[in-house]
Length: 425
Image (cartoon, rainbow, N blue to C red; front, side, top):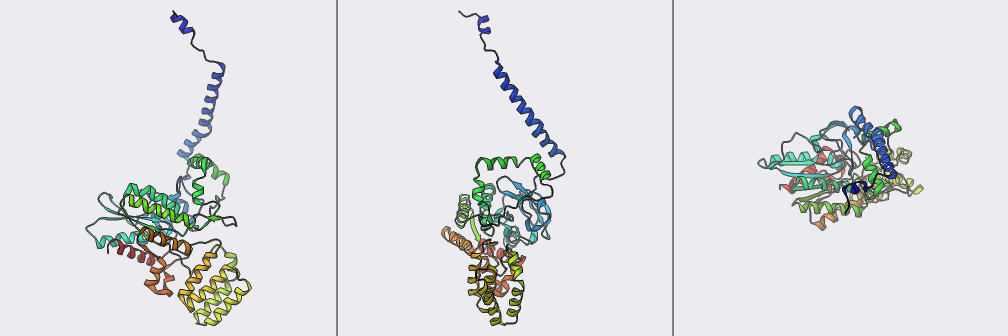
Protein backbone atom coordinates (compact mmCIF):
# COMPACT_ATOMS: atom_id res chain seq x y z
CA UNK A 1 0.00 0.00 0.00
CA UNK A 2 1.37 3.42 -1.03
CA UNK A 3 1.39 6.03 1.71
CA UNK A 4 0.24 9.62 1.26
CA UNK A 5 3.80 10.73 1.91
CA UNK A 6 5.07 8.53 -0.92
CA UNK A 7 2.40 9.88 -3.27
CA UNK A 8 3.35 13.45 -2.49
CA UNK A 9 7.03 12.87 -3.02
CA UNK A 10 6.42 11.06 -6.33
CA UNK A 11 4.85 14.13 -8.05
CA UNK A 12 7.02 15.36 -10.94
CA UNK A 13 8.98 18.51 -10.16
CA UNK A 14 9.35 21.35 -12.64
CA UNK A 15 12.34 20.71 -14.86
CA UNK A 16 14.82 23.27 -16.07
CA UNK A 17 13.49 22.76 -19.59
CA UNK A 18 9.91 23.64 -18.65
CA UNK A 19 11.13 26.66 -16.70
CA UNK A 20 12.96 27.86 -19.79
CA UNK A 21 9.77 27.47 -21.83
CA UNK A 22 7.83 29.58 -19.36
CA UNK A 23 10.55 32.21 -19.33
CA UNK A 24 10.51 32.43 -23.13
CA UNK A 25 6.70 32.69 -23.16
CA UNK A 26 6.77 35.49 -20.61
CA UNK A 27 9.51 37.24 -22.59
CA UNK A 28 7.47 37.02 -25.81
CA UNK A 29 4.32 38.31 -24.11
CA UNK A 30 6.29 41.15 -22.53
CA UNK A 31 7.85 42.07 -25.89
CA UNK A 32 4.45 42.06 -27.63
CA UNK A 33 3.03 44.22 -24.86
CA UNK A 34 5.90 46.73 -24.89
CA UNK A 35 6.49 46.95 -28.63
CA UNK A 36 2.93 46.54 -29.98
CA UNK A 37 0.03 46.64 -27.49
CA UNK A 38 1.21 49.72 -25.57
CA UNK A 39 2.04 51.69 -28.77
CA UNK A 40 -1.29 50.58 -30.29
CA UNK A 41 -3.21 51.93 -27.29
CA UNK A 42 -1.21 55.17 -27.23
CA UNK A 43 -1.72 55.82 -30.96
CA UNK A 44 -5.45 55.15 -30.70
CA UNK A 45 -5.75 57.46 -27.69
CA UNK A 46 -3.51 60.37 -28.66
CA UNK A 47 -2.84 60.37 -32.41
CA UNK A 48 -4.60 63.19 -34.26
CA UNK A 49 -4.30 61.31 -37.55
CA UNK A 50 -7.28 59.24 -38.67
CA UNK A 51 -5.74 55.81 -39.21
CA UNK A 52 -8.92 54.43 -40.80
CA UNK A 53 -8.72 56.68 -43.88
CA UNK A 54 -8.19 55.08 -47.27
CA UNK A 55 -5.56 56.99 -49.25
CA UNK A 56 -4.17 54.53 -51.80
CA UNK A 57 -6.47 56.12 -54.39
CA UNK A 58 -7.18 59.84 -54.35
CA UNK A 59 -10.58 59.60 -56.01
CA UNK A 60 -11.07 62.27 -58.64
CA UNK A 61 -7.82 63.89 -57.44
CA UNK A 62 -9.87 65.46 -54.63
CA UNK A 63 -7.78 66.20 -51.49
CA UNK A 64 -10.86 65.47 -49.37
CA UNK A 65 -10.92 61.87 -50.62
CA UNK A 66 -9.35 60.42 -47.40
CA UNK A 67 -12.06 62.16 -45.37
CA UNK A 68 -14.81 60.33 -47.25
CA UNK A 69 -13.24 56.90 -47.83
CA UNK A 70 -12.16 54.46 -45.12
CA UNK A 71 -10.36 51.13 -45.27
CA UNK A 72 -12.39 47.94 -45.19
CA UNK A 73 -10.88 44.49 -44.63
CA UNK A 74 -13.16 42.83 -47.22
CA UNK A 75 -14.07 45.60 -49.66
CA UNK A 76 -10.67 47.40 -49.44
CA UNK A 77 -12.43 50.77 -49.17
CA UNK A 78 -15.90 52.02 -48.45
CA UNK A 79 -17.63 55.28 -47.49
CA UNK A 80 -17.21 56.71 -44.01
CA UNK A 81 -20.30 56.43 -41.81
CA UNK A 82 -22.23 59.56 -40.75
CA UNK A 83 -20.08 61.81 -42.94
CA UNK A 84 -20.75 65.13 -44.63
CA UNK A 85 -17.72 65.82 -46.84
CA UNK A 86 -17.21 68.26 -49.70
CA UNK A 87 -16.19 65.96 -52.54
CA UNK A 88 -15.85 66.83 -56.24
CA UNK A 89 -17.64 70.12 -55.67
CA UNK A 90 -20.65 68.57 -53.93
CA UNK A 91 -21.40 67.60 -50.34
CA UNK A 92 -21.47 63.82 -49.96
CA UNK A 93 -23.59 62.84 -46.95
CA UNK A 94 -23.74 59.33 -45.54
CA UNK A 95 -25.87 57.57 -42.93
CA UNK A 96 -24.98 55.22 -40.10
CA UNK A 97 -24.34 52.38 -42.59
CA UNK A 98 -22.11 54.43 -44.86
CA UNK A 99 -24.79 54.78 -47.57
CA UNK A 100 -25.08 58.09 -49.41
CA UNK A 101 -28.34 59.86 -48.54
CA UNK A 102 -30.22 62.88 -49.80
CA UNK A 103 -32.23 63.50 -46.63
CA UNK A 104 -32.44 62.26 -43.02
CA UNK A 105 -34.35 59.01 -42.57
CA UNK A 106 -36.36 57.44 -39.80
CA UNK A 107 -36.68 53.76 -38.95
CA UNK A 108 -36.88 51.33 -41.85
CA UNK A 109 -39.29 48.98 -40.07
CA UNK A 110 -42.44 48.48 -42.13
CA UNK A 111 -41.02 50.26 -45.18
CA UNK A 112 -40.63 49.01 -48.72
CA UNK A 113 -36.94 49.08 -49.59
CA UNK A 114 -34.88 49.35 -52.75
CA UNK A 115 -31.16 48.53 -52.56
CA UNK A 116 -29.07 50.18 -55.29
CA UNK A 117 -25.62 48.62 -55.60
CA UNK A 118 -22.81 49.70 -57.89
CA UNK A 119 -19.88 52.04 -58.45
CA UNK A 120 -19.42 55.79 -58.91
CA UNK A 121 -22.43 56.00 -61.23
CA UNK A 122 -24.72 54.73 -58.48
CA UNK A 123 -22.88 56.87 -55.91
CA UNK A 124 -23.48 59.97 -58.03
CA UNK A 125 -20.11 61.22 -59.30
CA UNK A 126 -20.08 65.07 -59.26
CA UNK A 127 -23.83 65.27 -58.58
CA UNK A 128 -25.50 66.41 -55.35
CA UNK A 129 -26.93 64.12 -52.68
CA UNK A 130 -30.37 64.84 -54.14
CA UNK A 131 -29.25 64.34 -57.74
CA UNK A 132 -28.45 60.61 -57.71
CA UNK A 133 -30.84 58.22 -59.43
CA UNK A 134 -31.38 56.50 -56.08
CA UNK A 135 -32.57 59.68 -54.35
CA UNK A 136 -34.58 60.81 -57.39
CA UNK A 137 -36.27 57.39 -57.45
CA UNK A 138 -37.16 57.65 -53.76
CA UNK A 139 -38.75 61.07 -54.33
CA UNK A 140 -40.70 59.80 -57.35
CA UNK A 141 -41.96 56.74 -55.48
CA UNK A 142 -43.08 58.92 -52.57
CA UNK A 143 -45.12 61.07 -54.96
CA UNK A 144 -46.58 58.16 -56.91
CA UNK A 145 -47.33 55.94 -53.90
CA UNK A 146 -47.68 58.29 -50.89
CA UNK A 147 -49.33 55.61 -48.75
CA UNK A 148 -46.36 53.26 -49.16
CA UNK A 149 -43.21 54.16 -47.26
CA UNK A 150 -40.39 53.70 -49.78
CA UNK A 151 -36.72 53.87 -48.81
CA UNK A 152 -34.10 53.68 -51.54
CA UNK A 153 -30.63 52.82 -50.25
CA UNK A 154 -27.65 54.06 -52.26
CA UNK A 155 -24.72 51.72 -51.57
CA UNK A 156 -22.70 52.86 -54.59
CA UNK A 157 -18.99 53.45 -53.97
CA UNK A 158 -16.58 55.03 -56.48
CA UNK A 159 -14.04 52.62 -57.88
CA UNK A 160 -16.01 49.46 -57.11
CA UNK A 161 -15.86 46.51 -59.47
CA UNK A 162 -18.56 43.86 -59.83
CA UNK A 163 -16.49 41.76 -57.41
CA UNK A 164 -16.94 44.38 -54.68
CA UNK A 165 -20.58 44.82 -55.69
CA UNK A 166 -21.10 41.11 -55.06
CA UNK A 167 -19.54 41.42 -51.61
CA UNK A 168 -21.75 44.44 -50.90
CA UNK A 169 -24.82 42.41 -51.84
CA UNK A 170 -23.72 39.53 -49.62
CA UNK A 171 -23.34 41.97 -46.75
CA UNK A 172 -26.56 43.98 -47.04
CA UNK A 173 -29.27 41.96 -48.81
CA UNK A 174 -29.63 39.39 -45.99
CA UNK A 175 -29.70 42.16 -43.38
CA UNK A 176 -32.03 44.68 -45.05
CA UNK A 177 -34.18 42.20 -47.03
CA UNK A 178 -35.15 44.76 -49.70
CA UNK A 179 -38.10 44.26 -52.02
CA UNK A 180 -36.06 45.44 -55.02
CA UNK A 181 -32.32 45.29 -55.86
CA UNK A 182 -30.93 47.58 -58.58
CA UNK A 183 -27.61 46.68 -60.23
CA UNK A 184 -25.55 49.31 -62.06
CA UNK A 185 -21.91 48.25 -62.44
CA UNK A 186 -19.13 47.62 -64.93
CA UNK A 187 -17.06 50.72 -65.61
CA UNK A 188 -14.18 49.63 -63.37
CA UNK A 189 -14.05 45.93 -64.19
CA UNK A 190 -11.76 46.18 -67.22
CA UNK A 191 -9.35 48.61 -65.52
CA UNK A 192 -5.75 47.33 -65.49
CA UNK A 193 -4.28 45.88 -62.30
CA UNK A 194 -1.31 43.80 -61.16
CA UNK A 195 -3.67 41.00 -60.13
CA UNK A 196 -7.40 40.54 -60.56
CA UNK A 197 -9.79 41.37 -57.72
CA UNK A 198 -10.57 37.69 -57.31
CA UNK A 199 -6.88 36.72 -57.10
CA UNK A 200 -6.25 39.50 -54.59
CA UNK A 201 -9.02 38.15 -52.37
CA UNK A 202 -7.64 34.61 -52.64
CA UNK A 203 -4.13 35.71 -51.70
CA UNK A 204 -3.74 33.04 -49.01
CA UNK A 205 -2.04 33.39 -45.63
CA UNK A 206 0.15 36.36 -46.59
CA UNK A 207 -2.81 38.36 -47.86
CA UNK A 208 -4.82 37.48 -44.76
CA UNK A 209 -1.95 38.54 -42.50
CA UNK A 210 -1.66 41.87 -44.32
CA UNK A 211 -5.40 42.46 -43.83
CA UNK A 212 -5.16 41.71 -40.12
CA UNK A 213 -2.08 43.90 -39.61
CA UNK A 214 -3.72 46.60 -41.69
CA UNK A 215 -6.28 47.10 -38.92
CA UNK A 216 -3.53 48.22 -36.54
CA UNK A 217 -3.53 51.97 -35.86
CA UNK A 218 0.09 51.77 -34.67
CA UNK A 219 1.37 50.04 -37.82
CA UNK A 220 -0.59 52.45 -40.03
CA UNK A 221 0.88 55.38 -38.12
CA UNK A 222 4.41 53.94 -38.39
CA UNK A 223 3.95 53.34 -42.13
CA UNK A 224 2.81 56.93 -42.65
CA UNK A 225 5.94 58.18 -40.85
CA UNK A 226 8.21 56.03 -43.00
CA UNK A 227 6.36 57.03 -46.17
CA UNK A 228 6.45 60.73 -45.31
CA UNK A 229 4.62 62.86 -47.86
CA UNK A 230 4.71 60.11 -50.46
CA UNK A 231 1.33 58.66 -51.37
CA UNK A 232 0.96 54.85 -51.20
CA UNK A 233 1.08 53.07 -54.54
CA UNK A 234 -2.07 53.37 -56.61
CA UNK A 235 -3.49 49.87 -57.20
CA UNK A 236 -4.40 50.80 -60.79
CA UNK A 237 -1.49 49.48 -62.84
CA UNK A 238 -0.58 50.71 -66.32
CA UNK A 239 1.89 48.21 -67.76
CA UNK A 240 2.13 45.55 -70.45
CA UNK A 241 1.68 42.75 -67.89
CA UNK A 242 -1.48 44.23 -66.38
CA UNK A 243 -4.69 42.20 -66.20
CA UNK A 244 -8.33 43.33 -65.96
CA UNK A 245 -9.54 43.79 -62.42
CA UNK A 246 -12.48 41.59 -63.39
CA UNK A 247 -12.84 39.62 -66.63
CA UNK A 248 -16.16 39.60 -68.48
CA UNK A 249 -16.69 35.98 -67.38
CA UNK A 250 -16.07 36.92 -63.74
CA UNK A 251 -18.37 39.93 -64.08
CA UNK A 252 -21.15 37.69 -65.40
CA UNK A 253 -20.63 35.28 -62.48
CA UNK A 254 -20.71 38.18 -60.00
CA UNK A 255 -23.98 39.53 -61.40
CA UNK A 256 -25.51 36.05 -61.43
CA UNK A 257 -24.48 35.61 -57.78
CA UNK A 258 -26.15 38.89 -56.79
CA UNK A 259 -29.33 37.87 -58.61
CA UNK A 260 -29.29 34.52 -56.79
CA UNK A 261 -28.83 36.18 -53.37
CA UNK A 262 -31.66 38.61 -54.10
CA UNK A 263 -34.02 35.84 -55.18
CA UNK A 264 -33.17 33.84 -52.06
CA UNK A 265 -34.54 36.78 -50.07
CA UNK A 266 -37.56 37.27 -52.36
CA UNK A 267 -36.23 40.49 -53.91
CA UNK A 268 -36.90 41.57 -57.46
CA UNK A 269 -33.78 42.49 -59.48
CA UNK A 270 -33.47 45.31 -62.03
CA UNK A 271 -30.35 46.16 -64.01
CA UNK A 272 -29.06 49.33 -65.67
CA UNK A 273 -26.22 48.67 -68.10
CA UNK A 274 -22.96 50.48 -67.41
CA UNK A 275 -23.09 53.95 -68.97
CA UNK A 276 -20.16 54.68 -71.30
CA UNK A 277 -19.70 57.97 -73.15
CA UNK A 278 -18.08 56.90 -76.41
CA UNK A 279 -17.85 60.54 -77.52
CA UNK A 280 -15.31 61.26 -74.78
CA UNK A 281 -11.72 60.63 -75.97
CA UNK A 282 -9.77 57.62 -74.68
CA UNK A 283 -8.00 58.30 -71.40
CA UNK A 284 -4.76 57.02 -69.86
CA UNK A 285 -2.81 58.03 -72.98
CA UNK A 286 -2.27 61.76 -72.38
CA UNK A 287 1.03 62.03 -74.23
CA UNK A 288 -0.46 60.60 -77.41
CA UNK A 289 -3.49 62.89 -77.20
CA UNK A 290 -1.35 65.98 -76.56
CA UNK A 291 0.73 65.10 -79.62
CA UNK A 292 -2.37 65.20 -81.86
CA UNK A 293 -4.44 67.82 -79.99
CA UNK A 294 -4.16 70.40 -82.76
CA UNK A 295 -5.39 67.83 -85.28
CA UNK A 296 -8.33 66.94 -83.05
CA UNK A 297 -9.27 70.60 -82.68
CA UNK A 298 -9.11 71.17 -86.43
CA UNK A 299 -11.26 68.11 -87.20
CA UNK A 300 -13.81 69.32 -84.65
CA UNK A 301 -13.88 72.75 -86.30
CA UNK A 302 -14.39 71.25 -89.76
CA UNK A 303 -17.27 69.10 -88.50
CA UNK A 304 -18.90 72.18 -86.95
CA UNK A 305 -18.63 73.94 -90.31
CA UNK A 306 -20.18 70.85 -91.98
CA UNK A 307 -17.00 70.31 -93.99
CA UNK A 308 -17.32 66.53 -93.70
CA UNK A 309 -14.98 65.73 -96.60
CA UNK A 310 -12.23 67.90 -95.13
CA UNK A 311 -12.62 66.34 -91.65
CA UNK A 312 -12.63 62.85 -93.12
CA UNK A 313 -9.46 63.50 -95.15
CA UNK A 314 -7.63 64.92 -92.13
CA UNK A 315 -8.47 61.85 -90.05
CA UNK A 316 -7.65 59.40 -92.86
CA UNK A 317 -4.29 61.03 -93.62
CA UNK A 318 -3.26 60.87 -89.96
CA UNK A 319 -4.35 57.24 -89.68
CA UNK A 320 -2.43 56.29 -92.81
CA UNK A 321 0.78 57.37 -91.08
CA UNK A 322 -0.05 55.55 -87.80
CA UNK A 323 -2.92 53.06 -88.34
CA UNK A 324 -2.64 51.46 -84.89
CA UNK A 325 -2.96 54.71 -82.92
CA UNK A 326 -6.07 54.47 -80.71
CA UNK A 327 -6.66 58.22 -80.46
CA UNK A 328 -6.46 58.66 -84.24
CA UNK A 329 -8.87 55.75 -84.67
CA UNK A 330 -11.22 57.49 -82.24
CA UNK A 331 -11.00 60.76 -84.21
CA UNK A 332 -11.91 58.94 -87.43
CA UNK A 333 -14.85 57.19 -85.76
CA UNK A 334 -16.05 60.51 -84.34
CA UNK A 335 -16.22 61.97 -87.85
CA UNK A 336 -18.55 59.12 -88.82
CA UNK A 337 -20.63 59.43 -85.63
CA UNK A 338 -21.08 63.21 -85.75
CA UNK A 339 -21.17 63.95 -89.46
CA UNK A 340 -22.00 60.81 -91.46
CA UNK A 341 -23.99 58.06 -89.72
CA UNK A 342 -24.48 58.02 -85.95
CA UNK A 343 -25.26 54.31 -85.73
CA UNK A 344 -22.27 53.28 -87.85
CA UNK A 345 -20.11 55.73 -85.91
CA UNK A 346 -21.16 54.08 -82.66
CA UNK A 347 -20.09 50.69 -84.04
CA UNK A 348 -16.70 52.14 -85.00
CA UNK A 349 -16.29 53.80 -81.59
CA UNK A 350 -17.07 50.53 -79.81
CA UNK A 351 -14.30 48.85 -81.82
CA UNK A 352 -11.85 51.58 -80.84
CA UNK A 353 -12.44 51.09 -77.12
CA UNK A 354 -12.13 47.32 -77.50
CA UNK A 355 -8.59 47.94 -78.78
CA UNK A 356 -7.68 50.42 -76.04
CA UNK A 357 -4.99 48.77 -73.89
CA UNK A 358 -5.99 50.62 -70.69
CA UNK A 359 -9.79 50.96 -70.86
CA UNK A 360 -11.38 53.58 -68.64
CA UNK A 361 -15.03 52.66 -69.19
CA UNK A 362 -17.04 49.51 -69.78
CA UNK A 363 -16.12 47.94 -73.10
CA UNK A 364 -18.93 46.95 -75.44
CA UNK A 365 -18.23 43.27 -74.77
CA UNK A 366 -18.80 43.83 -71.05
CA UNK A 367 -22.06 45.71 -71.59
CA UNK A 368 -23.29 43.07 -74.03
CA UNK A 369 -22.45 40.41 -71.47
CA UNK A 370 -24.54 42.24 -68.89
CA UNK A 371 -27.53 42.17 -71.21
CA UNK A 372 -27.02 38.45 -71.90
CA UNK A 373 -27.00 37.69 -68.16
CA UNK A 374 -30.15 39.75 -67.66
CA UNK A 375 -31.94 37.92 -70.47
CA UNK A 376 -30.82 34.50 -69.20
CA UNK A 377 -31.97 35.33 -65.66
CA UNK A 378 -35.16 36.97 -66.97
CA UNK A 379 -34.71 40.31 -65.25
CA UNK A 380 -35.43 43.78 -66.71
CA UNK A 381 -32.41 45.42 -68.34
CA UNK A 382 -31.89 48.87 -69.85
CA UNK A 383 -28.85 50.03 -71.80
CA UNK A 384 -28.24 53.50 -70.31
CA UNK A 385 -26.64 54.78 -73.53
CA UNK A 386 -29.74 53.72 -75.48
CA UNK A 387 -31.96 55.39 -72.86
CA UNK A 388 -30.08 58.66 -73.30
CA UNK A 389 -30.30 58.53 -77.11
CA UNK A 390 -34.02 57.71 -76.95
CA UNK A 391 -34.65 60.70 -74.65
CA UNK A 392 -32.40 63.34 -76.21
CA UNK A 393 -31.41 62.09 -79.66
CA UNK A 394 -27.91 61.12 -80.84
CA UNK A 395 -26.53 64.68 -80.88
CA UNK A 396 -27.58 65.73 -77.38
CA UNK A 397 -27.23 62.36 -75.63
CA UNK A 398 -23.53 63.00 -75.01
CA UNK A 399 -24.48 66.12 -73.00
CA UNK A 400 -25.98 63.81 -70.39
CA UNK A 401 -22.44 62.84 -69.35
CA UNK A 402 -19.99 64.90 -67.30
CA UNK A 403 -17.05 62.89 -68.61
CA UNK A 404 -16.21 59.44 -70.02
CA UNK A 405 -18.91 57.51 -68.14
CA UNK A 406 -20.62 59.50 -65.38
CA UNK A 407 -24.13 60.87 -66.00
CA UNK A 408 -25.19 64.40 -65.18
CA UNK A 409 -28.14 65.03 -62.87
CA UNK A 410 -30.33 65.07 -65.99
CA UNK A 411 -28.92 61.66 -66.91
CA UNK A 412 -29.65 60.35 -63.41
CA UNK A 413 -33.21 61.62 -63.77
CA UNK A 414 -33.70 59.53 -66.93
CA UNK A 415 -32.30 56.46 -65.16
CA UNK A 416 -34.59 57.04 -62.16
CA UNK A 417 -37.60 57.38 -64.47
CA UNK A 418 -36.83 54.02 -66.08
CA UNK A 419 -36.61 52.36 -62.64
CA UNK A 420 -39.88 54.00 -61.61
CA UNK A 421 -41.61 52.53 -64.68
CA UNK A 422 -40.44 49.07 -63.64
CA UNK A 423 -41.27 49.39 -59.93
CA UNK A 424 -44.49 51.40 -60.02
CA UNK A 425 -45.78 51.51 -63.61
